[in-house]
Image (tube, rainbow over all chains, first blue to last red; front, side):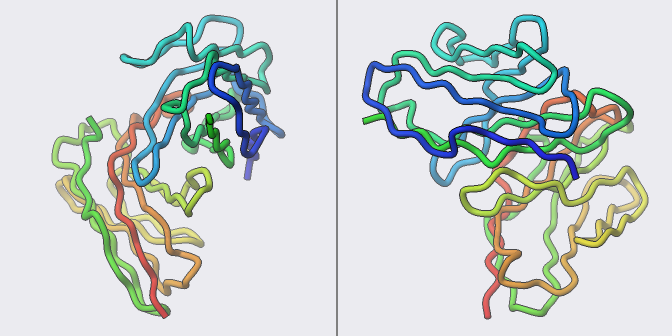
Length: 117
Length: 112
């Protein structure tokens, strides 16, 4: 099946710094990618929809100036957590579906575990 | 709103069939039933989906009731590696670019 990668797999940063997480579709092109956040023992919560070549669409309650999303190509979306705080510590997961043809399946990345100290 | 309800947790003996129920009483005619699972600290993995007919693939079987208000995911011979959280999701037919709304899922524990 199709593969989505994320980098880094885990990162520890100091409070107040920014962290960039990359999401890549390795063997297909994706006009849309999704970013989710998951706190311990909780379900995945959609943060935003990343659209290639245009602005991301954010879910209610997600600050667009804090979670910057850039979908510069059909295979790469980045999520930057700006001025990170300990409460931003979470598991961040992206997903994508192939742009071409009919696809009923979303492919998820392995996730990035962010710890803010 | 997740639009589905699932039991919070279930246990299953290794080698036995695991039957995971899902209620989706408000499903509309153009929505599929999808199942994904998430093994600890990994991204979710697609399992199977269906509209109204029962479906089977190499991972599982999906049984959808005639009124489509509920479904059951069946893992025919559960192994320890099937221990995961299983999510039942309803979504539109043309799902290529649609977001998925995850509910609480069912935490399946397969025991030796």
